[in-house]
Length: 101
Image (tube, rainbow, N blue to C red):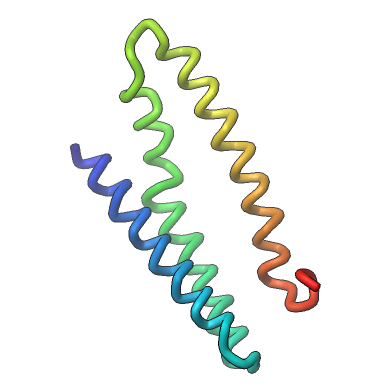
């Protein structure tokens, strides 16, 4: 129960962080705006590394049925790692102002 609650609060924190960064990205580009978005990315990484990142490994072994547990853990772990790689690539484009052009 505590892990699920921490996971949900972590996801809420990540969502708020992404909404703030997206809202700031719609404004005119200034140096202060870049620093603010960069700081929000650091906050995003911190919240992810403290809540959602480590807890997903515990949750993916608790949720499935016992007969399918090993297959589900392998599939969930592979999917999570693939999505982390994609997220890391996208983050580099988020930090480079000329990369999305």
